[in-house]
Length: 155
Image (cartoon, rainbow, N blue to C red; front, side, top):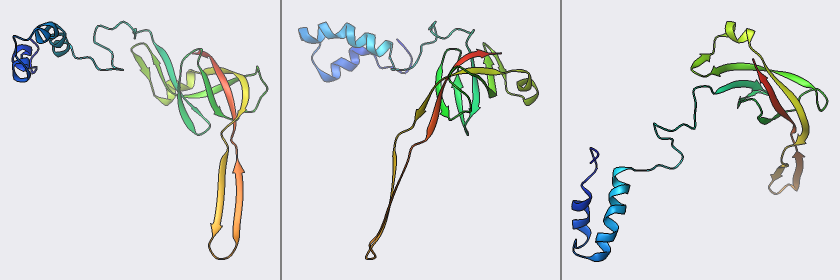
Protein backbone atom coordinates (compact mmCIF):
# COMPACT_ATOMS: atom_id res chain seq x y z
CA UNK A 1 0.00 0.00 0.00
CA UNK A 2 1.34 3.47 -0.85
CA UNK A 3 2.26 5.67 2.08
CA UNK A 4 -0.35 8.31 2.82
CA UNK A 5 -3.23 6.40 1.22
CA UNK A 6 -5.84 4.78 3.47
CA UNK A 7 -6.38 1.07 3.30
CA UNK A 8 -9.11 0.44 0.71
CA UNK A 9 -10.93 -2.15 2.83
CA UNK A 10 -11.11 0.23 5.82
CA UNK A 11 -12.23 3.01 3.52
CA UNK A 12 -15.09 0.91 2.14
CA UNK A 13 -16.13 -0.26 5.61
CA UNK A 14 -16.97 3.34 6.43
CA UNK A 15 -19.35 3.77 3.50
CA UNK A 16 -21.02 0.40 3.10
CA UNK A 17 -21.33 -3.17 4.20
CA UNK A 18 -18.48 -5.45 3.11
CA UNK A 19 -20.95 -8.31 2.73
CA UNK A 20 -22.77 -6.51 -0.08
CA UNK A 21 -22.07 -8.13 -3.47
CA UNK A 22 -21.92 -4.73 -5.14
CA UNK A 23 -19.11 -3.65 -2.79
CA UNK A 24 -17.18 -6.89 -3.38
CA UNK A 25 -17.26 -6.26 -7.12
CA UNK A 26 -16.13 -2.65 -6.74
CA UNK A 27 -13.28 -3.27 -4.24
CA UNK A 28 -10.62 -4.18 -6.86
CA UNK A 29 -11.47 -1.07 -8.89
CA UNK A 30 -11.30 1.20 -5.85
CA UNK A 31 -8.02 -0.36 -4.69
CA UNK A 32 -6.51 0.24 -8.14
CA UNK A 33 -7.57 3.89 -8.05
CA UNK A 34 -6.23 4.38 -4.51
CA UNK A 35 -2.89 2.74 -5.21
CA UNK A 36 -2.19 4.44 -8.54
CA UNK A 37 -3.78 7.90 -8.68
CA UNK A 38 -3.91 9.34 -12.17
CA UNK A 39 -3.68 13.03 -12.94
CA UNK A 40 -4.72 14.08 -16.44
CA UNK A 41 -2.06 15.98 -18.34
CA UNK A 42 0.87 14.81 -16.22
CA UNK A 43 3.48 12.29 -17.31
CA UNK A 44 4.53 9.45 -15.09
CA UNK A 45 8.19 8.93 -14.20
CA UNK A 46 8.57 5.92 -16.51
CA UNK A 47 6.93 7.67 -19.46
CA UNK A 48 8.85 7.53 -22.74
CA UNK A 49 6.95 10.39 -24.38
CA UNK A 50 9.72 12.92 -23.67
CA UNK A 51 13.13 11.70 -24.72
CA UNK A 52 16.35 13.42 -23.77
CA UNK A 53 16.92 14.37 -27.42
CA UNK A 54 14.30 17.14 -27.50
CA UNK A 55 15.51 20.27 -29.28
CA UNK A 56 13.59 23.51 -28.94
CA UNK A 57 14.27 27.22 -28.69
CA UNK A 58 12.66 30.26 -27.16
CA UNK A 59 12.76 33.01 -29.80
CA UNK A 60 11.92 36.70 -29.69
CA UNK A 61 9.48 37.66 -32.43
CA UNK A 62 7.41 40.82 -32.54
CA UNK A 63 7.83 41.82 -28.90
CA UNK A 64 6.83 38.38 -27.61
CA UNK A 65 8.68 35.16 -26.92
CA UNK A 66 7.60 31.87 -28.50
CA UNK A 67 8.69 28.28 -27.82
CA UNK A 68 9.47 26.63 -31.16
CA UNK A 69 10.73 23.30 -32.50
CA UNK A 70 11.63 22.29 -36.04
CA UNK A 71 8.44 21.94 -38.09
CA UNK A 72 6.28 24.19 -35.91
CA UNK A 73 4.13 26.86 -37.55
CA UNK A 74 4.04 29.99 -35.40
CA UNK A 75 2.02 33.18 -35.94
CA UNK A 76 4.01 36.35 -35.15
CA UNK A 77 3.67 40.06 -35.87
CA UNK A 78 4.11 40.99 -39.53
CA UNK A 79 7.58 40.36 -40.92
CA UNK A 80 9.04 41.97 -44.01
CA UNK A 81 9.34 39.52 -46.90
CA UNK A 82 7.38 37.49 -49.40
CA UNK A 83 5.86 34.03 -49.01
CA UNK A 84 8.65 31.45 -49.22
CA UNK A 85 11.40 33.80 -47.99
CA UNK A 86 13.65 32.68 -45.14
CA UNK A 87 13.90 34.82 -42.03
CA UNK A 88 16.10 34.54 -38.98
CA UNK A 89 14.60 34.80 -35.49
CA UNK A 90 16.64 35.86 -32.45
CA UNK A 91 16.98 33.02 -29.93
CA UNK A 92 16.65 33.84 -26.22
CA UNK A 93 17.24 30.28 -24.98
CA UNK A 94 18.19 27.02 -26.68
CA UNK A 95 17.56 23.52 -25.28
CA UNK A 96 19.32 20.56 -26.91
CA UNK A 97 18.57 17.42 -24.90
CA UNK A 98 20.10 18.02 -21.47
CA UNK A 99 22.16 21.03 -22.60
CA UNK A 100 20.56 24.44 -21.97
CA UNK A 101 22.11 27.51 -23.61
CA UNK A 102 21.02 30.91 -22.31
CA UNK A 103 24.18 33.03 -22.34
CA UNK A 104 24.39 35.91 -24.82
CA UNK A 105 27.84 34.83 -26.05
CA UNK A 106 26.70 31.28 -26.83
CA UNK A 107 23.42 32.45 -28.39
CA UNK A 108 25.30 34.75 -30.77
CA UNK A 109 26.64 31.61 -32.47
CA UNK A 110 23.24 29.89 -32.71
CA UNK A 111 20.39 30.76 -35.04
CA UNK A 112 16.77 29.83 -35.70
CA UNK A 113 15.66 30.01 -39.33
CA UNK A 114 12.06 30.04 -40.50
CA UNK A 115 10.18 30.20 -43.78
CA UNK A 116 7.28 32.60 -44.31
CA UNK A 117 4.15 30.52 -44.98
CA UNK A 118 1.37 33.14 -45.24
CA UNK A 119 0.23 36.58 -44.15
CA UNK A 120 -2.84 36.81 -41.92
CA UNK A 121 -4.99 39.31 -40.10
CA UNK A 122 -5.80 39.05 -36.41
CA UNK A 123 -9.29 39.27 -34.94
CA UNK A 124 -11.24 42.50 -35.27
CA UNK A 125 -10.96 44.76 -32.24
CA UNK A 126 -13.78 47.29 -31.80
CA UNK A 127 -13.03 50.54 -30.01
CA UNK A 128 -16.09 52.52 -28.92
CA UNK A 129 -15.92 55.87 -27.11
CA UNK A 130 -19.02 57.51 -25.63
CA UNK A 131 -19.54 60.60 -23.50
CA UNK A 132 -22.81 61.03 -21.70
CA UNK A 133 -25.17 63.96 -22.43
CA UNK A 134 -23.00 65.47 -25.19
CA UNK A 135 -23.81 63.25 -28.15
CA UNK A 136 -20.14 62.28 -28.53
CA UNK A 137 -19.72 58.84 -30.05
CA UNK A 138 -16.61 57.56 -31.77
CA UNK A 139 -16.09 54.13 -33.31
CA UNK A 140 -12.78 52.67 -34.44
CA UNK A 141 -11.63 49.23 -35.45
CA UNK A 142 -8.29 47.48 -35.74
CA UNK A 143 -6.95 44.19 -37.09
CA UNK A 144 -3.35 43.25 -36.43
CA UNK A 145 -1.22 42.26 -39.43
CA UNK A 146 0.35 38.85 -38.73
CA UNK A 147 2.72 36.43 -40.45
CA UNK A 148 2.70 32.64 -40.13
CA UNK A 149 6.21 31.15 -40.24
CA UNK A 150 7.37 27.53 -40.29
CA UNK A 151 10.53 26.76 -38.33
CA UNK A 152 13.00 25.02 -40.66
CA UNK A 153 16.20 24.78 -38.60
CA UNK A 154 17.57 25.33 -35.11
CA UNK A 155 21.36 25.50 -35.14
